Image (cartoon, rainbow, N blue to C red; front, side, top):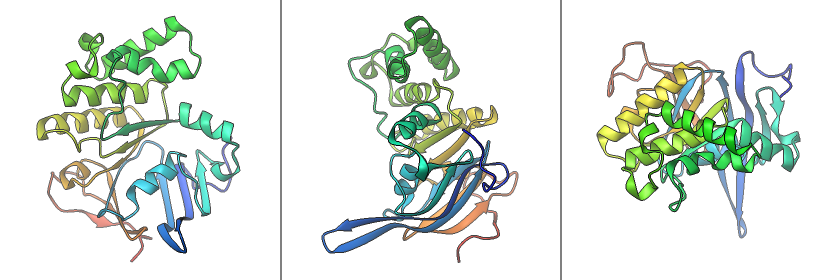
Length: 254
C-alpha cells in the first residue's frame, strides 16, 4: 500500500469520525457513532464493552468486512473508502488475518489442509502451500497434529489451527473476535500467550473480549459504549491480571 501523508505517524490503522448506521424499517441503529482511533504498527489492543456497544461492528470495519456510513478509514496509509471491491478482497486476503470464537474450520479437512485454504484462494503453488502451512502449524505448536481433523482436536488445538490459518499469508494485522470465548481457562491462557508471542514478533493485534483477564494482557484497552469509545487505557507496566486498569489516554471520549 502507498502511505498517505495525512495518516497519523506510525499508525497502521487510523479511523476519523467513523460511523456505521443500519436501517431497520423506518428506524436506524447507530452501531458506531463518530469513532476516531489510531493504532500504531505492532500494538496489541483489547476492545471491551457490553453487548451492543459496537465492538464487533468496529472489528468488521477494521477488517474491511463492513463499510463506514460516514467518516474515513486509512489502513497502512491508504484510504479504504476509495478502494474497489477487488482491491478490498485483496486487502482482506493478504493484509489482515481473522480469528473467530467458533474457529470456522472445515470439518472434513485436516489441520494442514485448513491452514492451506487461504493460499488455495490466493493461487499459491501446492508445494509452497504445504511448506508454508507446515511452518505456520509449527509456529503454533501443532506440527505433530497436522493430519488430524477438527473433531480429533481439543478446543484449544482447533483455535491454534485457526491462528495458523490466519497468519499463513503473513498479514500485518490480526483481528480476533472473542478468541478464548469457547475455551476453558487453561486453553484460553495458552491462546493469549500465543497471541502475545506473535505480537512480540511484530504482528499488530486487535482483540475483542468480554474477559477482563484477557484484556489485561494487552498493552492498551479501548472501552466502548453505545457505539462510542468512552475510554482508552494503557495498563501500567507490571500490572497483573485483574489489577489496576492504568491511566486513561488523552483524547478519549468522556
